[in-house]
Length: 288
Image 1 (cartoon, one colour):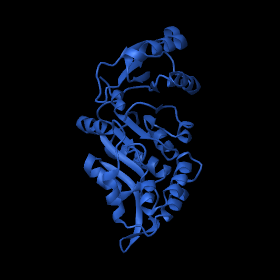
Image 2 (tube, helix red, strand yellow; image 1 turned 45 degrees about the horizontal axis):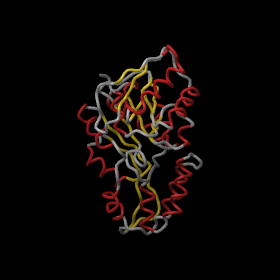
Image 3 (cartoon, rainbow, N blue to C red; image 1 turned 180 degrees about the horizontal axis):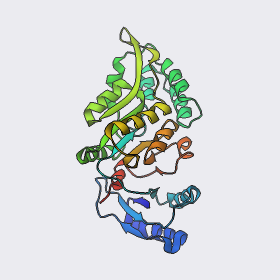
């Protein structure tokens, strides 16, 4: 099954129908999902008689890129009793928290360069996080709470989280960022479970160190498996969403793993991602 996310059907649908028809001939038919999400984006389902290979799906995406149409391939739609596991930085929020803390410390360019390398998978995440945190040495620990109100949600996130809670879905956020930020976010958006890193501090100042095990790709994967068992939810009903290479194992363990505005380092290892649509298009994953 293919899901196409379209912002303006009146402009885009003729092109979409032509492209889909040319590629799949009689194998496929488009059906509009009647429900409409808060952002106003539309979804068209296409029922395909075969599984589409990754290379063919990537080719289709390239053709639809200029029209800003996103496409996902899934085997099934999900029920309300589901588990959604999210990355935090550049996924639920627009910023990378460690980069924003670096602004307070006056070392933004240095830290942001390391972040970009890590997100593309060119650096070991644990090593890169320790390297970035070392730049924060001497920064007031209060900077974390001062930063939190300045963080902005990605488009569609607020409506998505609200509707997921209404449906009774379980929500989890596994962040390579920091507990101070994530615990505040958990309270504001009623997140069931969170995992994040603990910044060491002495006398109200950051030491530049990180305490305990770092939330890397293995911890994210393990946390998803742990919560799946805790909540008694089958893999089929687990959705994982992230943007960087650190999220790849988590996405692989989900029934449906989706890159959201993903880096190339993540795209190279996954099948499904969203480039253009807001986050609330994930509501179209639900049955009915």
